[in-house]
Length: 213
Length: 223
Image (spheres, rainbow over the protein chains, first blue to last red):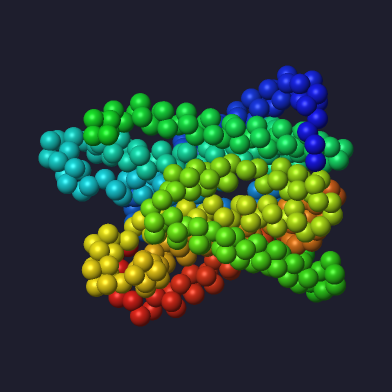
């Protein structure tokens, strides 16, 4: 299997466009996933009976094959970017929800009591005490969800989207490996860069961790 | 929506749908074969690696990065790539599924090993246990719950992803998803998806049963 370098140099514009569209789909899904999981995780954390139900539900969603989710969304949102993003969001939920709940669980009870004793209201405690302390565990989930989404976007190629995944169908149909190799390498590259960027974000968001390290 | 579910019920329960080479029973067996074999191979590769890294404490950085690298691998691309390289064989499916399962197994095995209380290991060594004895008689049993979690996670991912075998013209339950997609037959797609999810959940429950059986003599741990 040889790489046709001239094909790559002749398609740099197309590759860039696909990579950007790929990243957009994945990041939108993670952001939406966070918007859904954060409130749900607070509910799962505070209301014990709902905890098993919510975590179990996200586990069940995880077992549905991604291609099937995309196809099943077709009657609702059609062959659009929306379908891709909804499908990916569903997959991020299992990781984001579980990690956020675990993060909130890891906040020491004494810290919360101290906040209460100082007269901090529950919502404020949640936003200024619990979430910041849960951040490392939440961010671990965000990193996994991001890398997972970036790798999953390509599945949406079967419904005509899929960013870099379009290179896979293209190469498959023409029996031409170069676009497939380019797609795999670029996907991994996007994932590595996004992961490193998130490590940077976490560093910026948790200044109190730096002094100890 | 109601119509769709009614048709789905009909599709899943009709006797004709279950028999023959295109029948659910046969596709189910194929799907199980792909998933179980791939997970088994992944376990044979991933378990020793995770155990060794956890036991020696060396190469942890490499293992964690390899795992996140593995998670980033686009399965569709991998399947197509191996398909173009090897032609029409089962290799693309197994290579992609094994590559998908190994990272979960390695990271969870390693996590289980690092979670073992260092004092317990010190005691074992102090009693004159050798390295391999500490590994197999102390660390492994204590790390087993997390190792099992990794295996279950890997199996769920593999079962859901084995759907892709149908894309490179193999069988399994993915046949219904891809054929349904090609024929715009939503009932068939939904039927395939429901069956895949059911298989994943059933296997996960079976493994959690095995896990409970393995630990039935152990006093309840704080979770």
